[in-house]
Length: 552
Image (cartoon, rainbow, N blue to C red; front, side, top):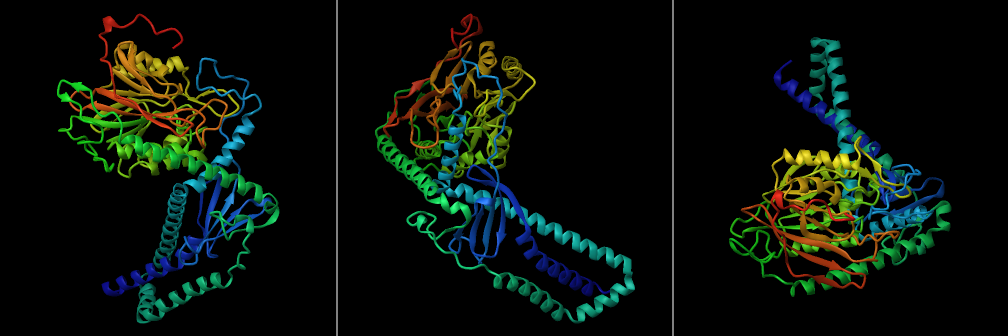
């Protein structure tokens, strides 16, 4: 067989296999993702609609011509709401300020959280869309590649079985009629697509309950229609109230930003420049990957315990942009229970932060291994008994050893107790070269500070701010809850208690924190930006207090 004939045969074969298997891969691939608080399976269809299948309850049919091209549609088969961790008789220790007293109310709180998850689809749908596009595209490409490889491999095996002579004869006949072969492939593909098109379902009969909402023009079938009015009203009201609340907060933030305290701190290199002025990012928030050595400082935005408050995620993103931050640091508890459905909480925060801003997180006790796995897959740096560099500063940290879910106390995820885990972290800190420790619970980082193996530690968990202050031989700063997470109340939605986040400046030469500025949002939609507060210097080991203060 000539080289030209062999090449043409190969090209035509691959094209034919690719064209014939693409529709099969497109319409048979499935992606296991989430829908609001539910587990869900997604599949591409050819009916120009979004079909949300709730099983025995019925279906929600949404016109999709405006946002799904080529007459394609999407079918979502809704599964159960995942709950990780089993209820047990173990109660959370009274000293844990993150405790949630839940004598029989956990179910109500969980249901309210589900409403908040549905409402987040209205308030910030792009994160859900991005998740679906990524998941389905990956499933389709894998299925298509597998089909092409299997069929092509089968043809190669068949050729080996037939032998060179028979293959050459078949190839000569095939190449002589190559146009006919290509035409046959096109006809088969068009016929398959035509069958799909001509079997399209009946048009959607719009349900008036959706008029004036993002689901206008949709239809509900089955028993679901009997409760849809109440459900849509509850979700829409929640989303509207949430959007209105944080729209007002952002307007107030921008007004207060122009009046914020911007000076008054000094180092041995001169006065520290204001955050966002003369720094690497500037006022537009387009931060560089590293700090500007001439500016003298690296600027970080630090938040913790957002607990899936997607409204406050908007505030965090705005502060990161306006401050010209070089990186974002999260002290953990970005979710409420760490289920896979709550990956959406991190996705919304990720979307709100400036696009190229480096970001780092450490697992909190309300997060899970799934939370941090998802964070890593979206480009976040995750501290897991490890170090990572952000803006020229080396951070060291580890995941919280516990997992806390509604209706049960914290469950250890390691073979060590919390105290043993903290001691191990101290030993690792003593053997590691780093600038700042990042942990979720201040108690976990306390032994490293007392021993002199950590000069500075950032944390959250307590839902109250502490410091910056000396602790042992080092300096700690404990952030309050950025999500306004009040005990016995849902976090998503308008605030029920103050929410806080911080801007921290680090000296580029010494890699030590210089000062911090606190931003507070209260339930009255007021924003306060405090003056800069200096970080104290670490103490020599001989000067450290003999023990921790009572109650810490």
